Length: 364
Image (cartoon, rainbow, N blue to C red; front, side, top):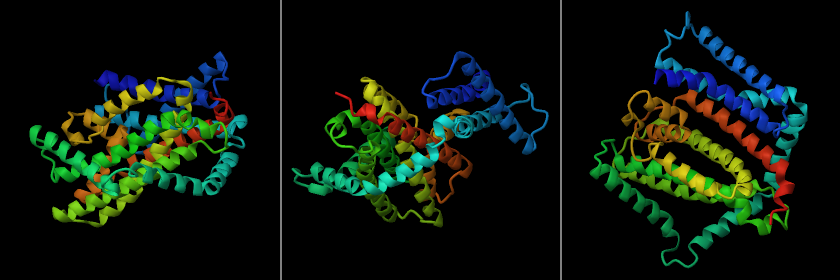
């Protein structure tokens, strides 16, 4: 385990940074420059991380004196820097990529969101009405469905498998609510352009508006589910503390990370026909690695730390549960790390969609 973590901490961050840089250049990088960029990120990332450790008082660090805990921290810091560093490198030095990039695309995003805001809201409302148009119970299904799922998983994991988390029904319901929002939007993002080709090929519309509309729809459902969470907290007399306010920034980060992943997959979903099947398998695996039905503390060390912090969904779920049920604050260093990563991923996703939007209009 020690050797595996050490290898990952050494090679994975520069590989991710190298791959992101080449992606931002759309593969237009010669063989010599590819080697240069990998060596540059390898030296830069590890020098930066070791420099941070030195500033924090870590002295005489060698391979023999490294602990598993330090390797996990080194890997985590390296991954965060690996996502952020190529973006700023391109912004500063690769003027042909992001010269007008952040300014031009940033202004364009704000203008497009304001211009098409009515479409987003009306489309979300139309889909909400369509879902319950022919049902007898109408909007009550938005309450009944999550409650039934909560009871099923509470029965299976709470009684049959003997999970002992306090307020287990609410514990599961929070996890299901956040996971459902993420998985539904990501699954939709993969197929959204092909599923809406009649709109894409005939009318100009920023393609990510389709995803925002779906996120608004699922966000409304998530809001209802959190309303049920607060009702259950009152019913089971769960103490409410001032830490409940931390749910707001946590949900914001869930929105941002979901949007970032959705926009990136939206592009590749146009050209990789099997991507929806692959994402379905990945989502099923990720659901059981995110602690939807159990606490991440059930994993032995150091996997509890690896999965609890390096999996953003697990971190957001655990932090939301801690704020609502146990009255504790999120781990802000991890929160802001994932906030930076999500922001960069969202910028890359928006840049990719704007760069290829003419090609989307030609899909058959």
